[in-house]
Amino acid sequence: MLGVVLNALLPVVVTLGLGVIAGWRHDEDMKAALSLNRMVFLYALPLALFAGTVVIPRTELLSDWALLLAISAGTFAPFLAAYIGARTIFGRPMQASALQAMAFGFPAIAFIGIPILTPLIGSKATIVVDVAGLTGNLVILPVTLLLLSFGQTLVRSPDAGKPASGRAAITATILPTLGDALFQPVVLSPAIAILFVLIGLQTPAILTSSFKLLGSTVGGLSLFASGIILRAQSPKFSLPASASTLARLLLIPGLVYIGLTLTGADANLRKMSVLALAIPAAPMQVILATRYHTDESENAAFLLYSYVLCIPTLAFFIWLTG
Image 1 (spheres, rainbow, N blue to C red):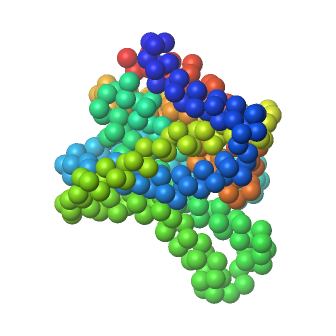
Image 2: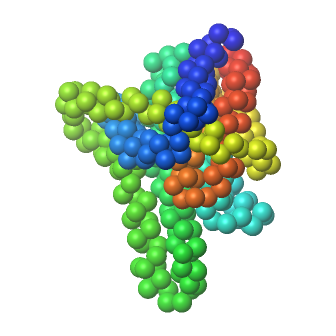
Image 3: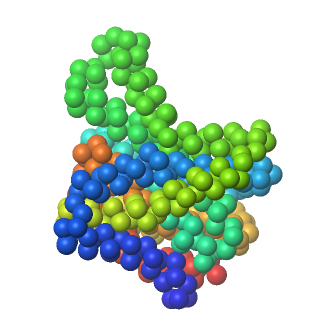
């Protein structure tokens, strides 16, 4: 089992560590890391999502509803619960609450799902990544971007949060923010790919292979840039980051395992869903934290804890799911 875990996670740890070393040696700095993250966010990740989704057979896409339901429940429900709790119980600002909710509900499946899951579940890893992307990239990411953008608008213009003129306020703030979130390349690309699959529109193989050339760099570049950021910010102990890490790696996949067991789900569905949800945090959280200048150190700490602690927690869930 240790060999399987190391085979899945060692490339991730090494790449993250190389980023830390690059930052420590001053070969790269925060400016370079942010530039790499921006390239991933605007180009590499959208291309990877499109190329990975558009080749799924329509029957396969439509038949994986149970997997979609399980992963959706294990991502969106924790996201919603964490956001409401952060806002109402802990009184955190909108942007900080959105990022904390993303920590709960957005594992790095799109970024590093293939290299981690392939040694564990074989060729089904691609399907799991694509199914998880439906919820993550079409629901959680747009909602997070909306909350971050709207929170930024409120900070810059506090009067935008007042109910002054109803329809005028919606037109002036919410609609432009919603449009900005929904028209991000990382949101549009999988949506277009799914539409192509559903209507049976074939994408030339030479085009998808061209997209994969840059898209295949997503995991490496994101982790390397995250390592640079970790070194630059030197994250210290953070109670919210620690709680989020434990919830992300233990509580959420554990609850999904219990739920699927009680409902009589087959072993393969349990294994695919639980292992996907046991994947550590997405570098996207650090990308957005630095982009919106919100709790950068806390989110960097969460990323660090997540990758360190996922080795024993993922080993536990590999053992649990057989």
